[in-house]
Length: 194
Image 1 (cartoon, helix red, strand yellow):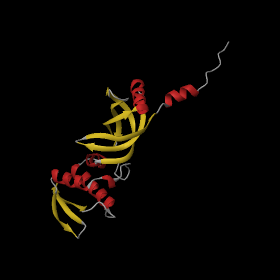
Image 2: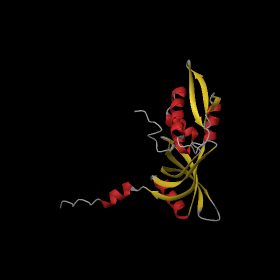
Image 3: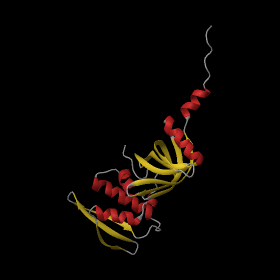
Image 4: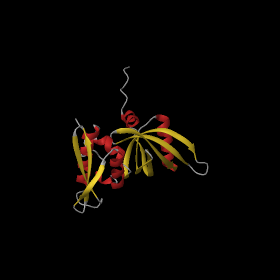
């Protein structure tokens, strides 16, 4: 089964227009001409064909998401990569995103308060990726427990991508998914034969 942007939990409205323009330029696309007042045509010859992308001029246009989906579908063909891989390159920020994963590393804690940097490993655009964040107080203690006991967690925050590094800003609702422990504690022990 081929995973498409439509199947993804990442809304294409979050693709920054300038980021997409830069991506097209870096990957050999050329801005050709304006299309009416709301878009521009981009072209790239590849594999004996001339591919075309209609790129909106503003993110506020009503068909912005549809045009971005179409652009990613065309890029999938030209680059022979999945739409999710391309979308992962275009992500600059995902507000109020829930991350599920494991704690990979606890960095040296801050000396002045109960907090510190944490490296998480979570799924973003269908791929495991390292995510940097800083947690404090109860969330920091839970992260240490999750790290020590290798327990999965769920956390919500604003995910941004800066220089190919994912950072979770404003993290909150850090919860350890302790299903295995809960299941074991709720099971009753069989009566011993005696």
